[in-house]
Length: 410
Image 1 (cartoon, one colour):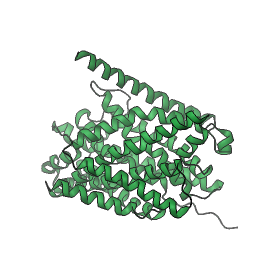
Image 2 (cartoon, rainbow, N blue to C red):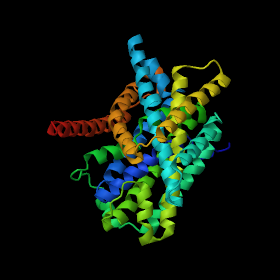
Image 3 (cartoon, one colour):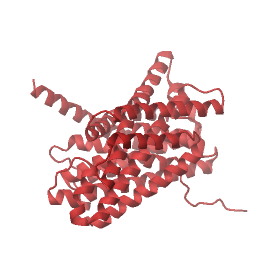
Image 4 (cartoon, rainbow, N blue to C red):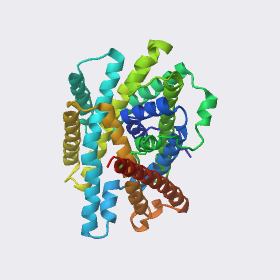
């Protein structure tokens, strides 16, 4: 009897890591480290664990039940009005939100190029990044796109790992950041760190990818869950390395920066050109991966909402939906909008949207008639409920803080 191979295989979990370590994560982690040192490391640890819990549900939904999240939301909606509302939420969260989010991804890639080469023709660089993303999306089939994205993820992970090695974070200071506390003025940054890691559209991407990547058998579902946990765990480590690089250099030196591009330029005098090139290369790879995965997730979800006639028609529709997101994102990126402000705003908005999508995912994962043995058990519900409760508490505090600030200006 031959044994089933147990070596690690990349899959949709790797794409999720590629998606959440985008320009938003790089920028937010850089600003968090520069402004608050290591004090918000705990937020990234929580966000990584929470992402593992929620994405595990998406992996079971796609690999086990053979359902995308968008399709499951519509099928589980009780009545026509609820179905319309569920579809509307998907359109709002993905088609509209990701079009704006895409501009930040493209601009993040541009900032990476500028960190490597110095100031350049920004609008021309926007078009180049958009064309590269479009070329990958035009493939239209999951497996070839996955291979390209995995390569970019490896480049990105290596770049940020080596940059952290160069600046040598203090292990004691890093461990001290595991104590859960929000520093003064750090609430919105905490929400942004969580929002940049537990990205709502990744739940759609993972379920759709898992359905295409894995076979429908118990061993494949187990492998899908394993791949998800390992890939997302590595992604969380990369996020912590980015924050640590900023905390070990910018915070210690008291340098004020506004982006990861600024960090690349600021640490060069102290740590040499390799540090700058590594951060720049990591930011460029992060921009490219997210510029592909955001339209990819949107196209998968819209194909679930509006099922194609056949596979060929589905690939055509996938390309149309995905390229539309890239086109709108490119148009926004070509304006004079502030790239960093756009990126941070998107991450904070993700933090507020997360509880809504997470609650809907939890409800779906308890539909035994729909999911059979792949429905949530008690432990999964407890873990998912805790994630939702904490996300709601932080989001509620953020909204109240915004209201207080608004009232103070009246």
